[in-house]
Amino acid sequence: MYTSLYITELQSERRIWVYLPNDYAISDKRYPVLYMQDGQNLFDQRTSFSGEWEIDEFLDTQPDAGIVIGIDNGGDARIREYNPNDSEEFGPGLGREYLHRVVTILKPYVDERFRTRPDAAHTAIAGSSMGGLISFYAGLFHPDVFGSVGVFSPSFWMVDSLERQLQSLPANGYAHQRYYFYGGGKEGEDMVERLRSVQAVMDTKLGASVTLRVREKGIHAESAWRRMFPDFYAWLRQSS
Image 1 (tube, rainbow, N blue to C red):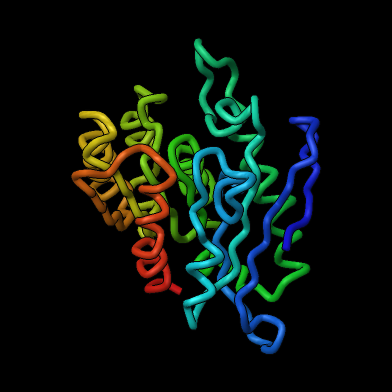
Image 2 (cartoon, one colour):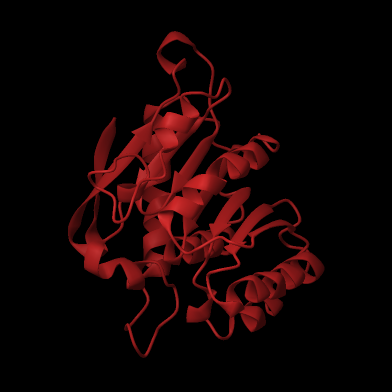
């Protein structure tokens, strides 16, 4: 099932995918919610860029599945939309505006129409590559909204000053949050090294709990992220 959200800044009709657990229609309970970037790649092979994550197929096998909200990317605007920092190569970043819309328009829409558990402890956000970058910033910018954050193969290379940005944030101000980092050994020599560097600052300065998963043969592709999603979801449910 899916619905649409209109995002004024991007002047585009945005498709929102809504996964509801198998028991949603026959229960009266409330569910945790996971928001995910690049909705085109999550549920349907026909709309995916290079293969889907098969999230619905996986969650249909889980007795304690929650709600998943997939947000389609903005196509040509994707890189700017998923980057809150300005870039000489790609132009002004739209990431802050994008996250503002997710938090102030989409989340209230979801919480009003579905039986959610709206507190931060039961609200997560995740994405891969550029989607991993903006999901990471979602946790930093809105720690009162997202208690858990999934960061798959993030494009940290876009932000040379990332560690300095983290050092400027309040000490231990993120102690209530959990982060799941994943990187593949075949994604380039800097991927895992940078994840470890950011993890160190998150642990020592910000107080956040960071779990790092590394697959030595992992590549930068939907197939690798699909393979890791069950591990991420098991980690996520530990906090729900």
